[in-house]
Length: 71
Image 1 (cartoon, helix red, strand yellow):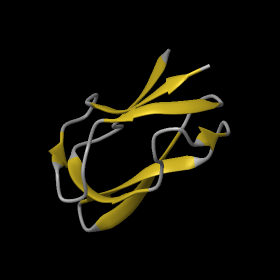
Image 2 (image 1 turned 90 degrees about the vertical axis):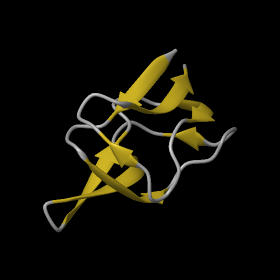
Image 3 (image 1 turned 30 degrees about the vertical axis):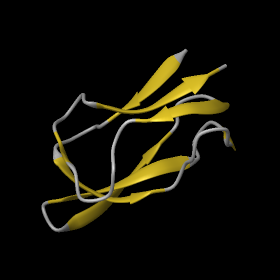
Image 4 (image 1 turned 90 degrees about the horizontal axis):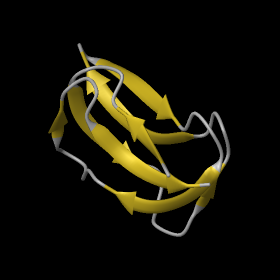
């Protein structure tokens, strides 16, 4: 199991992945707003989304878990 983590602090603008969905490496799974910029957060590897740990509007810190993937 792998986890997609926030690369910087910000507010979750959009959650692009849903449990059960297969994502490919490099596919955006969450979009953050940080310093008035939209920052897409991609999956580092392919997998199936097991759990989405954030909701739109949530504030996250750098390193917080966003999405869990199963290989």
